[in-house]
Image 1 (cartoon, helix red, strand yellow):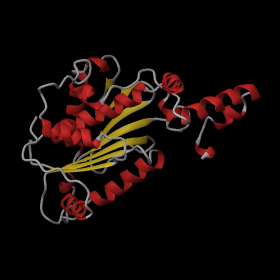
Image 2 (spheres, rainbow, N blue to C red):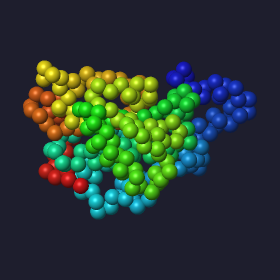
Image 3 (cartoon, one colour):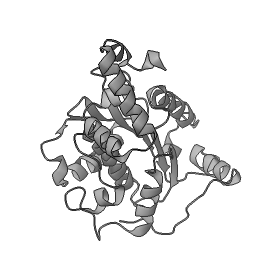
Image 4 (spheres, rainbow, N blue to C red):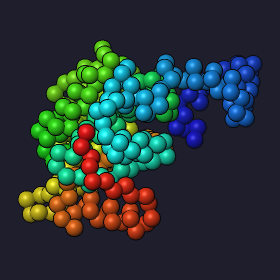
Length: 270
């Protein structure tokens, strides 16, 4: 553990009195001392994050009150629980899959920006670049659909005003936080610490011989996600279903067999 904790050497360099004070604070926090926990929150956060529903619905944030249906909100709310790592979502064309991605991605970016030092909080090296990434069947699909929806979501959210710079296939945020977009062959997220990944239209990622490319792509993406964020990464795999042999259909059936809760809804439209 110590070799991944980049503040370890800094703690060792404290004088004995300061080290003792630090350990007393940590002990009190472990025992549930609310005053100490509040003090730690103030040390960790520039701004304590609001609850997910307030972020999605509140006027200060995404402002989607009366603009998003309950089914879609239920799916996003469930996925954004801290203990949930993956979401497999099959829905028809025009159902609002990209809308959900944009909201969840904005939520992930928001939580990173609320931290004083995202790199230190996640025990990364100083100045580490943390990213969310969207991958789609083609670069144009990723940029013109999913990424465009995400940028539009932020552009209409007062909290994000002056907090991001959109470029062709990425958004730049303070604190070395980024949102990236690319096609199924993209390696744009290499060199970044990937916190959230989304694979859009996964069922249609096939090569010229008709073989699926998505399994290999997701395997590489999961490796990137779990390297630095094993207990907090998020993975979304979304698509319109192609047939009963495609990656998404097979995995949804596997999830059903394993007894994991599956939400079935007829209407995902905004």
